[in-house]
Image (cartoon, rainbow, N blue to C red; front, side, top):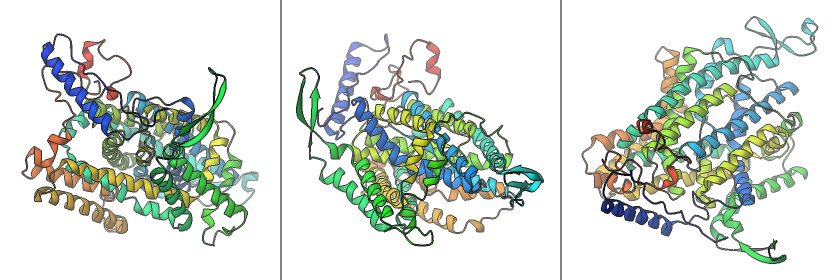
Length: 593
């Protein structure tokens, strides 16, 4: 295996009968130059279109699984307590079912996005943006957790509850609440589908330049520092150990080739080969090393078994009941908790979450493109990506994960650390997610990953995302007072407004609960506030295209209004895996290349 592989050069596609041969030759030369520059500057071990061996795909896919496990497990567990799932055997089974459903939905959405969506190596999973409106729905009077009735009430062998006048068991208590959440998520997803299908997102991106992308992407990472600290504070030593191993493998040892034995069936002999083991699996090595260390400290009782003592959450056995109570095989399906219930207030709250998730995903697409060393996504890829995310949110609502789906920022950052940007790897990860969701007993083993290990991973991942956002400043004129003003004000406004809103959410009182929730969700998102401020100033303050960085930023993008070009000058990576020229009506769809 070669040490590094660049992206495959993609020739230019030009409609037959449109333009002369001289123009086609010039455009082909431009395309070769662009792709040549990408190849020369690439530091990826596997590029977007490369296909690693199957065993490496499985290993890389498992690495992405471990990076995403924090959100895929953490969010369902947070949701489970708000859904009034009881802390008993049946309740633990319900939590395990929520987790397995989340795995399956994440796998399906990842396959859709990487195959017929924007086709970037992006993992799809549950979004924290849907958590605030979920809290608003479950805070309504009829959704307050009911008290348990006396043991043996109505001669029942299970615990019963008086839920708004109805006598039900613990399973119906939480399933009634999640059905209301499902209805809000499913209906609100129609907005995201509409944005992608009509091309509205691609049209809006014509006004989005580096000065909008920088605060949007940068604040994605900066706004999550409290989340990382929340996990790290459990045991700072384990968190720093995780970061140290990650830095050692991904930076200091990245050029060290490790010898390992191989067998050639063709030559029928064993031989020693060398591979960049450290630079290919830094995340996996760091996670397993820290996980093993926590296990040793658990069995030796270095970490106490008392929930009131410090470091308790660093143990590897505190979530063991999820493993014991998970079924070996389970097939999640739409409507498994019952028919979703739609409420106007719930839909309005979730609509804001959809908008936040959409804007965050657009920033993630650009960040992923930079890390995967391909040009920025064209409008048809943006439209198709948002369309697939809308379908994913709708699927999550119908399946009942308790949250919508979005692009996983931490997995995008993992591309920059591992230097593996292959689309096939993410497709393999999607299949792994589905399999582990179906075989929920095996998948639940990873639930025991301790909090400080996840915190250590977030420490590096979120910092990487912020750095990727700031790297877009290379396109703009940093000697311009205009640009300095836009960058400074957008970043500071995003952080200050979001932090104030989170700390003083009760101060927002318009008299209408739904409107209050809208303001709380919008203003508590640093990424959304900073991105909107940057977008406004960049498009209203006087400035040349060169000064704003638009020319440099869009130098690899095609002007889709040119008469003689209908297909993108951009790398073929964004094209669909099947022909789109069989029907002449496809050019009227804004999500078709």
